[in-house]
Image 1 (spheres, rainbow, N blue to C red):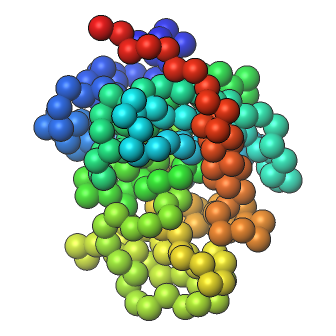
Image 2: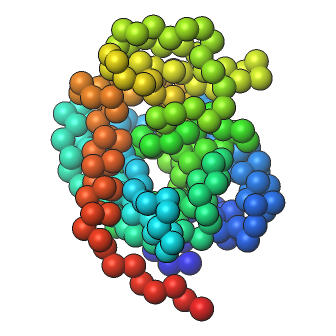
Length: 245
């Protein structure tokens, strides 16, 4: 592992928890790591917000991942730094296991930042996941940073009742009689967002931050900017080193 990335990680993160050799190991790692998720607010003053996203072609035979991390000032939401990285995925596209596919590239981008965000919004699920450990929780736990999952489609659960069409309408996201997050209609005539705790941010605060980052688009500004940056990196065709071995 790159020493710059290893230095970022929370203590006691075994290598198999980032790059498991098989799905059974990956599933066990998610279950173990999910016990480390802090579901309450546990962060200091917020002066910088982060947004992360990846871009890739699911049918790319080389499995290239293009990752972007964007840092924005708070308040103001002006982009102050963007970092990108590219890598070859060590795991195929399997719903529920995207953290293992995407987090290594995100860590490589994160390592390049001169300033680190106080809270990061992730394009993907947090605890709204079959094992309570989507990519937003995955990134938040391995880095030990406050994180929020902002997904564009559901993985598990359903709205508790019918979601209204008006912008700002919400419903609890429930699964197996447990609330895992909030479904938010962020923009009229748009599909809702599925918001959940990633790490060190409560469900209530996760929704509040997404709302505070509303600039009139479907996505909150941090993940919107990360989405644009990741796509720009992919289009630029960053060179990926040949696979070893």
